[in-house]
Image 1 (cartoon, rainbow, N blue to C red):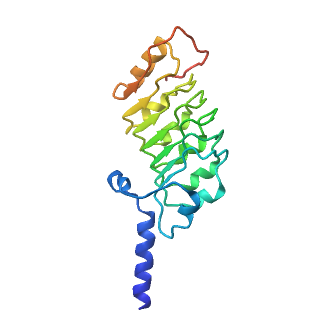
Image 2: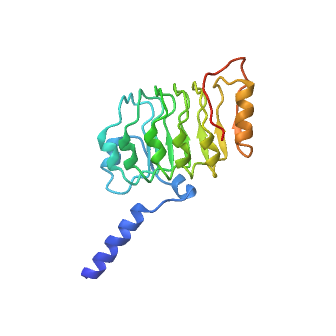
Image 3: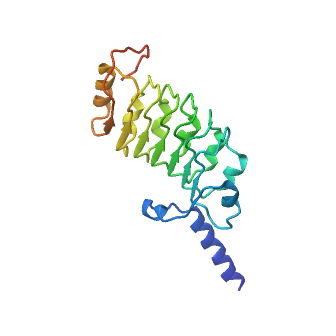
Length: 203
């Protein structure tokens, strides 16, 4: 009996830490309340906290170790703390329409991310560490103020879509990105008659 209990325990542990496929994830329940998610009593894979006037992420959020999808759209977030790294199972993260002034560096350590949406913020550059997100397939950054695009973007071997619509870019800057990422679906607005002071190391 004791052996059976141990087997059940280890199977439950394995199940809770396993990565779900996108198809499996899409069938999982979406919680829209942190309180209900914490009280669920079973693994919570999807949490949508859209439009809840959140100014900073509550510490209790990081108890949801099985989270694969986290949506924080239309809130008042100005920064994302390093504790986000505790959610290592995350595959999809959306922080659209907030007040982020920079690309949260801690996000670059979420190695299982396949989709990241930071659109409609005030982000002014993509960090060099972006290459750590080696599973990333979609990077959504429309409507920001980005003026720096690192060459490390080319190390994202699984990247399929990079959405940069409504980011002011010169024709020269757009050509540079197209040459840097020839196989990527680049979504760009028409170039502007503008210049940037950023220096790039293309070596």
